[in-house]
Length: 142
Image (cartoon, rainbow, N blue to C red; front, side):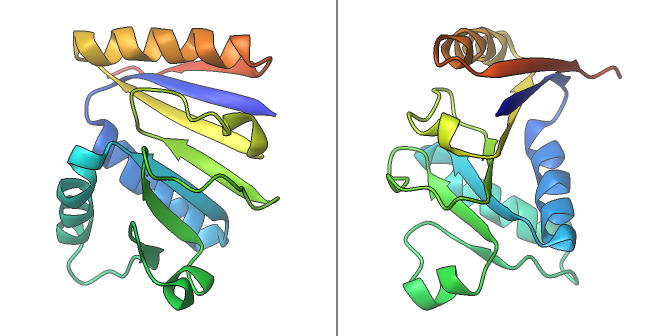
């Protein structure tokens, strides 16, 4: 299992939207962990980014029929389920590593430019290593 830690992102939420769109095109099962305080703002921003487009995603607390028909599942990081489907990938946008991160096929982690985000990214890097996961640093350049 590999963690891809993308750092130096000027807009982690826009980058995450590109990841979500790619996962949707490829039919991948993607879990997106977002801090609870940011969930509504992020979903609104993603939907407004392409009003004519369609993101087939299940928002937090979506009903089971919605979850069954969507390959993209957005969760409040504090309320994510404790069981991970075998073929799921994780897009990690929360400040703390989810305890089940090692259960995913792949983890994509986004770190912005803000000093608070950089420090949280460093803590997640160490947490992934402590879990025994291979971490690949993917610095982005402007």
